[in-house]
Length: 516
Image 1 (cartoon, rainbow, N blue to C red):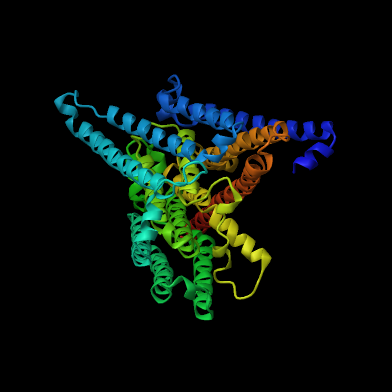
Image 2: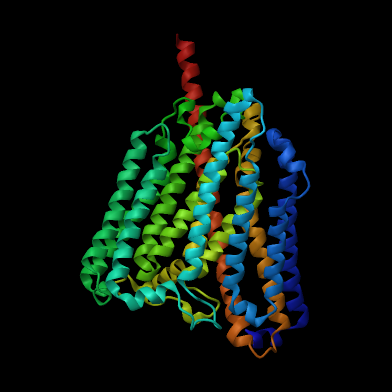
């Protein structure tokens, strides 16, 4: 890589770096433009957006600056996981501080009911943030990671020394908890439709296949025989069929009922939504469809990772799932006093911290090669490479799958409220922040890493530190674009299907009225 940089003309290298910087500036500019448009689209939150920058917003920019500066130091690159854990825990503490400040005990007696409701929401947010902080602390201590302090004890080493039987028990318990969490989140839908019941049963079957594999092949040496390979292939087929079927079929079969279709997570916003919205059923069908799809994405991905990851990573996967769902519940309330780009950045940081919590680092030695051959009966470089990518970027991809559920709890479609059915504006309000925030952060980090690699091409640690780091950044870029594509494709497909169904239903109703 370094030789290629040296041999290429300076003008060509400069052009490539300039193109990266230009794309980075364009993405950041688009992000600021959409942030300004929120002022006119979300009237009820104008006061929140017109105030000077708050502490959590300043810290987000400070964190990105810290990441960019740290890339020039080989020691900071080796110990990057400490930065991500610091960013995640600090933003959680800032959210915790803001939730405590939202308590209001000085209102008049006539406002006690409304104050009680607001304090109840704040109390729930505080409890969820405490759970997130606790889970993050356990994740930080699970794998020591890095280079300089790998000799220090961690939770994973302690469990491995205790014996494989304890690891197997934790793995089975984690699988059961992930299945229960997935079904619980799925049935947060107030409608309790038969569709949700069928999907919950499908997730249960997929989870039972994983449990059966764990119970039957607890010995690691027995996980690669023909019987184990066949059971894994059956799980792959079942999980793929379930996920693809839900995404493609769900928007067509979700019942078009009344506003009771709104999920419990969105009832927080019912008081602030104009009356026109309550008469527009497709909005709530869109919200519930994305809610179910996000739940299926998250649960299916966690079950897949339980099968592919090392057994010691079962508990970190469960804790990552808990953190994601706790964030979703905390952000679903209208009492969540954070801008959307701040919340999405917090989720992004959570995904990156989870990447290192699963035992990954910026050295190629920590890549899990053994897991890339699980369920493969014959050698295939392509399939092994895909599985290796899935294992390595399990946590960042979990972040992108969670964005589908995040969009479902943050749907506030102003053009639909006003009756101006501009599909471009609606999709921009749905996908603007969830797509631009990760793209912008990744573009900043990619540009900074490229500049550092060019400047450090003659450094002593170019091959051992900076080049492997750049490979990880390039792979992370591919992960970001794949994740954004999945989110965009899911939301656009769901919106198009519901838009067509709504038009078809209105035409049928019109024809029936004309016939009568």
